[in-house]
Length: 155
Image 1 (cartoon, rainbow, N blue to C red):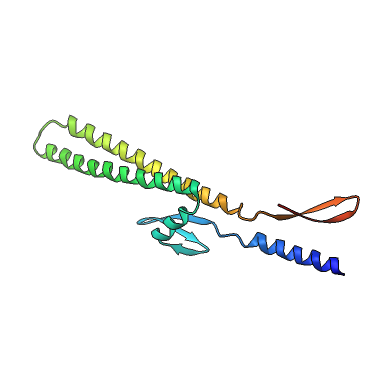
Image 2 (cartoon, rainbow, N blue to C red):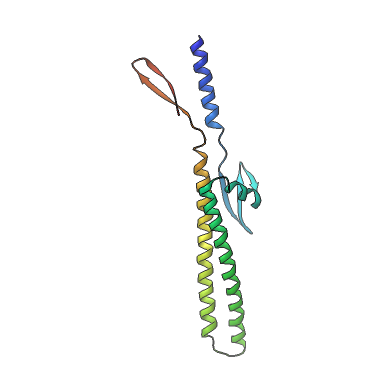
């Protein structure tokens, strides 16, 4: 009877240990940018930034995403300025070759930076979610040998 209590307590400990992991982060596009959720609760940008810094791999992708987004905003601002230059030249009947090249170039550069920022943000979330499965250092597996059937606690 003593062994049964020990086995039962190990079983309960194993079940509780595997169910106590943190929840994954999900991301959905919104009108003003992405919305992040954990346990069906929305996260603020400060909270998601703090969560991403917990894991070294996700923090690296998250920082790359922030830098790429700054590049996208700078190139987007240059695109806006070159579009004003194009419209100004249209009104004054001046040559349009330079402004058209500037609008196209800054638009392409901005979209490349934005795509890279989005990709790194997704990679950061995936890295964080992957790290959640490795929190517990033990698990129970069914075993059988010459002594019979049972559960083995593996580390």
